[in-house]
Length: 171
Image (cartoon, rainbow, N blue to C red; front, side):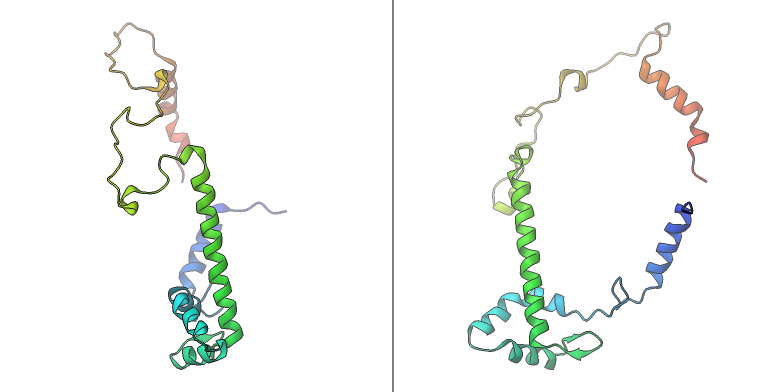
C-alpha cells in the first residue's frame, strides 16, 4: 500500500473543493434547494395537508413556484413526503442529542444559555459555581526565584523545547 502524502492530499482536496460548482453537492449532484424550502416551511406544508390538500397538489404548487428535484424536474408528491420525513428525522435526532447532552451531569449547571430562557446571566465570579480547581492548579502569586536556585522541571523542559524548536518547524 503506498504511503500517503498528506500535504498533497490537503492541496488536492482544497483544489477539488474550490473547483466544485456552487450549485453542486459533494457527490457532484445538482442542489435544487428543495430540502431548504421544506425545512423552512414544514409547518405550513403540514397545515396545508391537514386542511385537505394532497401531497401531490402541494408538490404541484411548489413546482409552479420553481421548486425542483434532480436535474430540474418538478418536485413530486413522493419526493416531497420523503423530504418532510427527512426533516422530521433530523429534528428528532437533534432533539435527542440535545436531551442526551442536557442529561450529562457535568453540564447540569450550563444546560441552556440564560438569555435564551429569559433569565439573567449566571454569576460568573470565582467561587460562585459548585466546582473548583484543585489547590495545585490554582494560580498563586509567585515571587521570582533567586538566581542561584535550581531550575524547575518545567523550566528545563521549556529550555530544551526552545533549543530544539527549529526541528519542530514545518516546511
